[in-house]
Length: 305
Image (cartoon, rainbow, N blue to C red; front, side, top):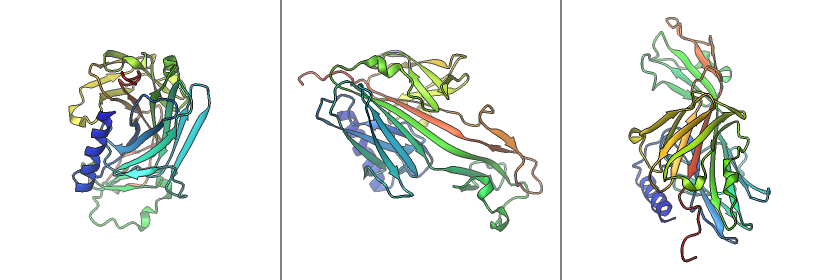
């Protein structure tokens, strides 16, 4: 719990001083603590960035959070920037959701988040990082009316993708059945713990990657402690034919395990879209799915409570 408070306070200070850059966009939910007693309030901090658990911008768009209780009941909250529904508060670059814990057992939080569809136009190859990022599908963009001053003759649409982001985390209470943590929640793209979640941070930890409920071979899976810079990530594995991968979570604390579909040809397609007169590039069209599984070493009742 103290680790999370220090982490949140540090990031909020960076937000205020402007030392964190704005960048895109993965989302995840981190609990304030992973142990609660009946009658407590559970707090989940939802952030957005490419970093492991460090938010660089306030997550935008539409998101739902479903807290599944051990008895099968579910509490749900929404953040909808279009229609104005906000079942949350903001703290720096975080949306903070509160759930009262009225029942004992293991609580499983599922997050779904989307910003709609993004289209990336590479305006000056070979620079594929810059160019134009537009929050619309390619067929909704009026390319003819766009100001193309400074664009090279070989500009092209690199990709256009709906973005679907999922996250899952756990809060335990008295009489928790930890085997529930090893069951899929039915998200389209999902990382399912196969090891007991209470062993996170003690060594090898097995997970399975599922796409629409079926094992997904060849998924890149990364793991790191919360707050780890991308350049310092050393745990990078690939799922086998059963979608399984073993990660060495070898230190106590909060861990984030991530995977996404990228431009996998099983999910996207190559198409001829508008492009410059000197370009022969095809465009990658289709969704990207991203997932963040957040684990802790705090699932047991603290001594003294």
